[in-house]
Amino acid sequence: MSLPLNEEHILLVKAWKKFGEEAQLQVLEEECAELIQAISKLRRGKIRFGKVIEEVVDVDLCIAQFRLFNKGILWNQYHDAKVKRLKELIGDFKL
Ligand SMILES: [Mg+2]
Image (cartoon, rainbow, N blue to C red; front, side):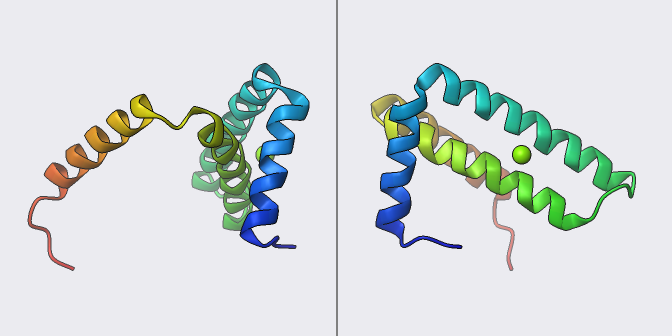
């Protein structure tokens, strides 16, 4: 089930407000750990790639909530610096 973007946005806001920042940060922490474990198991051939995607989606939804309530000047500064650094690493690589 994929919700229209506005519905999903509202759902993410409700989740953050209902459970609170501390709880949602803990969920993000746990989901990151699950993703790390899934990647490790994939490399050892213990799970299928779909499980990694599932865990990436979990982390993505947590980050989407975090971003809604923490996007600001500091976010933009870090984002711009990271994109600049990536651009430097890529250099003149051609597709
Ligand atoms: Mg998970």
